[in-house]
Image (cartoon, rainbow, N blue to C red):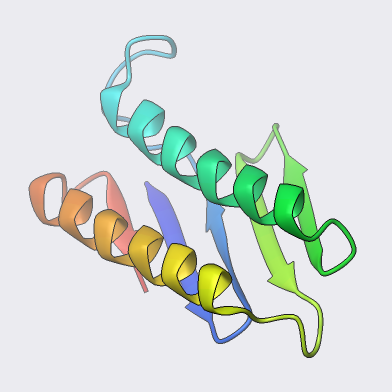
Length: 99
């Protein structure tokens, strides 16, 4: 199961959905695409204000905004990500959980 947690200054997404075999897992693909879009846009806009870390073995990606670096764009993107992951979890409750 994919677990997603959010704070005022970022998020962590971890795990594997288990919906299908690697390479065919639509839940994992959707989550990965959304998370990477947010990470890439925010680091492109403010490389010094964003810390992104990942671990491919555990399937964990974390994004943290440095103190004082939250912008309107970062707030909209992170809230949008959370909303979309909640919608996905409504359709696939056995595969993704938003805390």
